[in-house]
Length: 60
Image: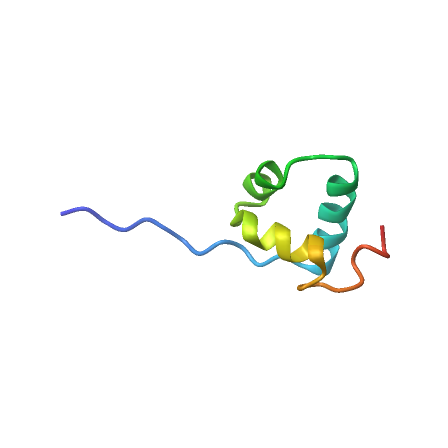
């Protein structure tokens, strides 16, 4: 019998969002940033557009 070893992705913080915004401004790809944080690229897109962690772009 196979065991399910999948775990939920870690939660991102406002501090993470600021670092992500900085990396996005430097031109890094969203999917590579997502891989570094072990999250779905959609989470990075939400940060980029300000849907989550609004104000993180201004803190860069």
